[in-house]
Structures are given as structure tokens and as C-alpha cells.
Length: 330
Length: 270
Ligand SMILES: Nc1ncnc2c1ncn2[C@@H]1O[C@H](COP(=O)(O)OP(=O)(O)O)[C@@H](O)[C@H]1O
Ligand SMILES: [Mg+2]
Image (cartoon, rainbow over all chains, first blue to last red; front, side, top):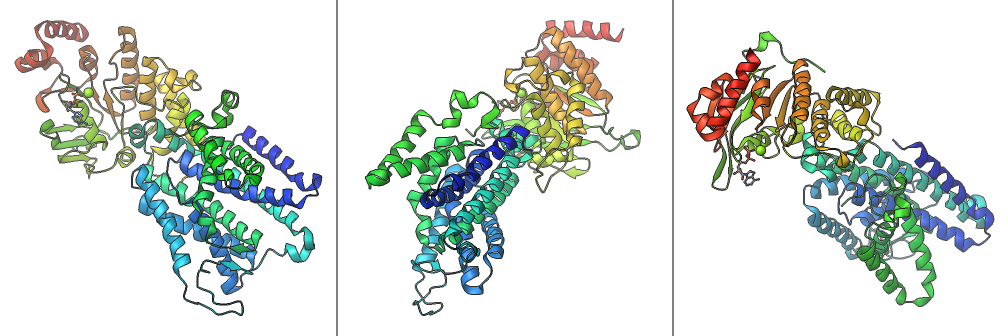
């Protein structure tokens, strides 16, 4: 169960973040913060899988895409209200994740990475290679999964109508709310029985098993449950940008997000959030350097892996109290 | 903790190993071994290093399943069960080397067994609940580690680590406890302490199989003794009979140790 101090830190962070739209009139800052919330949700959940469960999954962005595409398709084909489409999309993501997990979690580390990456690639090809027209709206031929162009105009949460040009402020708060829930969930996992089970499995797998801990079962649960917020983040991403296309499968985005976890501190509670913040700021600072930006991100990732593999949360200052949560994965 | 089966079930053994073998390549680490353990009994296992004692425990606990033969526990075939299922069936073990969860506090260490070891949890919970708190406290009190709950496992002295393994095993509420060299590497005072704790566990009605080289520990606690050599049983019978068995004296005890042991047993029974 989350400790009182974890909850206090979370409350303070949420309260501070909630002030952003009040102190800045710049739309760009608010919308970038919303994007930060979305990526932060993805990395807190990926961190659970990677750092807490020790599952080397590269399927996180594919799951994110499942959430985003489910939302868009439910809206586009069935005209479902987005408020309803969001939880349904999250549950669809959990279902897909359970199937992927059941297929690959009995494999050893590197094979899990390969298989999850293959699943992501399959989904990508399924979407982009399908060029047959499923419907023929005035805007042109529409493949079932949207093809390379993806989906637009599938609905929104109603804030554009309600608030006019200020709709993005409402999305900011929706994003913040979802992130707070996602962090609460990761706290409950890390501080609760599942976190203890995984810590035991890392410390001594044989001993953990003879004390009744089933590795496969808890990895599958973790993989399935963490997909809920990953799918929800994807769903909100699609709604926020009113568009979704196959670009979410890009490897550089996957690396960008993984760098957040590595820079912040894999397996820690607050590390991925810190990493997400730092990488988004760095990315912003390097925006003018064009191609050098990717190289810069690559250098940062390489530097951390070599010199600070436990991330910023692994620094002595961060480790003093139990800020970094239970011990990271090896 | 529940007490083990009473007298009425004595004729049905709690554990039966029937023709159990474990091969590592050409080596038969355990070779066609059969043994029965009654509920409430303490069976001691001795034998030279490499005799296959630990391998037998690995097979029973499911960590390294037997190559052939059957292991029956409470009438149920557990030969091929995975370790977590063996634990849920009611068998807990300790290890020859210090095995524990080094990055955890002593309390969390025991909590793993209390929470996950008692029954198969299909759905993971989000909190531990007060019953597991009580179970952890009870197990720590039983071994005398109640006031060390907050200490880090990796920093404990050897004797406390041995006691902690016992507490972890007990927290899963076992009917059968497998102890692998519980006093290996301890000094005489510490051995007495563990002996005392083991007697308490026996008093709870928990059936025990213990492996030990320290003969005074083995013979004083065991109702029955089994000696292994090259994976085979070379002796099974009373502790008193040990020193009179030519084979055991020759391959394991040696003349001197056997005489000292005989003297000790006379002293204890007197
Ligand atoms: N995992 C293993 N792989 C190969 N050989 C093993 C393995 N475990 C044990 N052995 C061998 O099996 C024999 C019995 O070992 P063990 O059961 O540990 O003996 P004991 O506990 O009686 O000292 C030894 O010869 C040992 O080298
Ligand atoms: Mg041994």
C-alpha cells in the first residue's frame, strides 16, 4: 500500500502542476505539459513492466496504439461518445496485453524483447499494408485501420464546444488527472504485495518460488494491469490531437520514452517522471538543431547507460530516504 | 498454526518417496531412494558431502524435479509440481546456504511467505492486511527474531539468517518442514539456540526432515535417522543404532567420532 509520504509527494506535485495554466498564458506551454502527462503515464506503466516486473517488453507503444486506435475506431465507425470510448479502449488494451503476455512471458529475457517488438511490427504492418477501401467517405478511400493516414474526426470530449479556444486547458487537467491515477496505481503495485513478490524474485528466484510466489502468474498480471493506463494514455492522446496514425509506432519515439526511464532511474517510483520531464525539456532545447537533436538524445541515453545506469534516482542524494522505492531491478 | 494429523492417521505416511532418482548426466545424485515420513515425526538425514541429501530436498520441493520415482504428500502426487504449488501443498524448506531476500527487511522477508505461501492467490491484492501482519509476528517470535524486524536481511549475522529462513518457512504454515543443515557453520552456543527453536517447532506438531552433519544435533532431535552415500540409503533406523552399524561407521562417522557419539547418547539418555 502506498505510504503516507508517497501520497504527500504526489499531492504536492499535482497541486503545483495544476497551477501551470494559471500562471502562464502561453498555449504552447500548456499543450506541451499535456503531452508530458501522456508520456509520463506511458513511462510510469512501462517502468512497472520493465523495472519492477523485470519483463523486457518493447510492446508498450504498440499497446498505446491499441488504446488510441480503439478509441478512434469506436468513434469513427460507431460514433461512440469519447467518454465511453476511453474506458472501453483501455479494456481492449488490457485484453491484447494479456494475450501478448501469455504468449511471451514464459520466454527468457532477450526473447521477450524480440517477440514484443515483433508484435509491435506486425500491428504496424497490419495498419499500413492494408490499402483496400473499407468505406468511401467524401474525403477519400478509408482502409479498415485507417492506413498510412490514420483517423481524424472521430469525436472529442466536448471541450471545444464548451470552452471554444480554451479547450486545451481542460485537456491539460484531464491529462493531469489521468497521470495522478496512473502514479497512484504504480505506487500501489510497487509498495504492495506485487512489488514485494517481484523484489523477492529479483533477490532470490528459487527461494521466492518455494515461498509460494509464481513468477509467470504475477508477471502476467502486471503486464495486463499496466496496459490499462497505457491504453488510456493512447486513447487520450488520440482525442487530444483529434488524430491518430501509424507514426506512434516509430522506433525513435520508443527510444525517447525508454530514455526517460533510464535517465530517471529504472524501477523507482519517481524516476520515470523526473526522466520524462528532463527529456522533454532537453528535446525542447534541442529543437532548433534539427538532425542533431536525435544525436543529442542518443548521446544522453548512452551516457546514462554507461556512467549512471541507475539513473538520477540512483544518485546518493536521491537515495538518502526511501525516495527511490523498493530496490531497482538488476 | 495448525497441528499435524493425530494418531488416527499414523498408518498413512505424510510423505512417501518411492524409488526416487535424480540424474545429472551420468551421475545418479539420488539413486532409487525410498523413504516414508509419518506425521509428527522428525527424520534426520546424514551422510558425506555429495551424498545427494540436498538434491533430495530439491526434488521434494519441486525446484529440481526427480528424474524418476514418485513423491506422494498427503496422498497426492507432487512429483512434478512447481515449487510454489509444493509450498501451497504444505511443504516449506530452508537452504544449506544463506538464502533470503537480501534487499528486504527481516519483516518483509517473512511477509513474502505469510502472504504468498499459505494459499495460491489467483488475483493479486493491493494490500497485505492485518492477518498477514499477525502471521509475520508469530513466526518471528517463534524463532526469537521479534525485535529485529526492521533490520536489513543482507546485514544479519549468520545465526540470525538461519533463524530467519526458519521463520520464513514457518510463516507459510507448513505441515512438513525440510531443514538443510540448519546449524552448519554455527558455534556450539548458537547450535543450542537453533536446537531449542527446532524443539519449539516440533512442539507445534510440524513434521520435520532435517539434514545435518553436526551429529549431536541430528541424533538428539531425530526420531529416526537415514544415512545416504552416493545417492543411496545405507542406513535407516534409530539414532542409537547408528554407532553400531559397521557400514555407517566406515563410510561416514569414522571410529573416533562414532565412539564420542556413542558416549554422548548414553549421557543424554541417562
Ligand atoms: N545442479 C547440479 N548439476 C550437476 N550436478 C549436481 C547438481 N547439484 C548437485 N550435483 C551433484 O550431485 C551430487 C549430490 O550433491 P548434493 O545433493 O548437494 O550433496 P549433499 O547435499 O549430500 O552434500 C554431488 O556430486 C553434486 O556435485
Ligand atoms: Mg547439501
